[in-house]
Length: 225
Picture 1 (cartoon, rainbow, N blue to C red):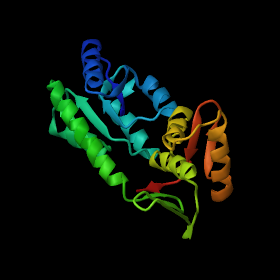
Picture 2: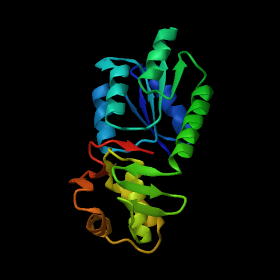
Picture 3: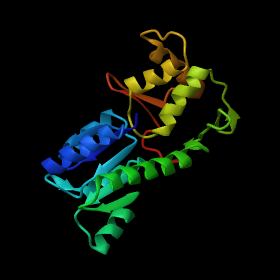
């Protein structure tokens, strides 16, 4: 189930949009302030963000620019009543994937959301580069500095989850789900064991930890995909 972060301060509209997203099968988290949005994206992983521009504690443009400056490539749809061409261009130039002018049919938002998720998935399947680390999902191949790194299925699946969300903290729960998908039983400390093996193969500094929250790969270095 795709996790969507909805940032909308209007109570009736936010309630309606969050309900519609959940009815469409998305795991929607709704916040009304940018400070709350920042807290959620620090400790959770979202597949897309629906962003209003005029929030009580700041500008959506600023939030988006900071998101992109942190190397986050999460798809963002701006949903705003600002219908001037200059506003739409500013939003897209700031890093938005789409711009939807209020009022709009909820079905249109859902359709546009599906479209940006498809585009993002298509862009993400060929190759992931984080520093000198390259992951090629089509071949399940991992290289570092041009050298092939041999990984077990669980190590590979965990690394893939991390590089897909490079420069963002990935919650423990998300990584544990990745281990469960590989089948067999998973012990309580399985995640720590696999992370330890990955660090041994890739270097101790490759994967960063924040206790009680999760892990991150890439730090502040640039990434391409």
